Length: 379
Image (cartoon, rainbow, N blue to C red; front, side, top):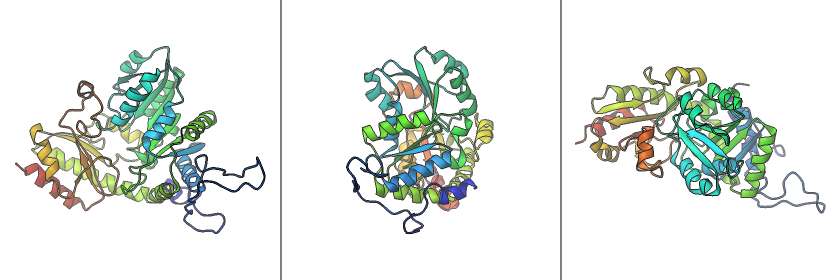
């Protein structure tokens, strides 16, 4: 079955009791037990809910995992995954990861004894230098947030495996439609379902899946024990969003490619980061491991002092955090999504104060280009 067909018919795609082609929203907290101590498939909705299960089966099938897990946010999914590690363990992660991931590690897990080193994960020498006897995992984003760095996932996972490390990949930017990290050697895949998978800026959710039964059992334990599970209403919305993921991603990346090319030619723009551009450092690797180049573009202006005026002058493109919705969203990472990372670390990673991140929506392309052009010309 083709991947785009799986998005519609994969997992549990209809109600087995009635044949309804939309899985019902099981808005319940608990379930009748016919005999004492002998619950059925479901006993309490923190531990399992039929609507959430349909979504979890779907993400596992799309990513090639053995089991999926749905959480109340992307960070809740990351929290459960990082709970696999013990005090004294060490992680290696990319130097421009999402600011919320950094904050979770720095403010929550580091005080509990989990250490980490941030490196440019494109550089194998930096990976080797960061390796310690306590290193347990390699945590990657590709494309990365916000600089759109491309990591060779197959090569990185093979390196990690040679050192008995887990490879964890946040696949939010690419989605399973464009990239499947488990097939490239990763052990765990994470998503902010809030973004492209939901696709309509109307829910907050996180997803995780793995192709390892033992890891699945552990993640499931932490999902239930910590309790940050996704409710049935948002589980239904997210499954519905995934049904149109293929057509939306095609529209996103078609517009993103044109917008990136438009920006490279504009005299007010200094640098454009988009893996679909031939001069992007990771272009060849992205072409090898991805079906397309995605809908995210980052760029810098020639005059950094005009950034605020530029983003505030846009009329169609919305100044807001998040990404992956059908509408175009723009933000300044140093002030917004990555503000929790200290300035010196952001600068070292290449995240300048004037860097702009654009989630290109599926609006009419000429409207987006005209909006950008007008804002770029504002004095």
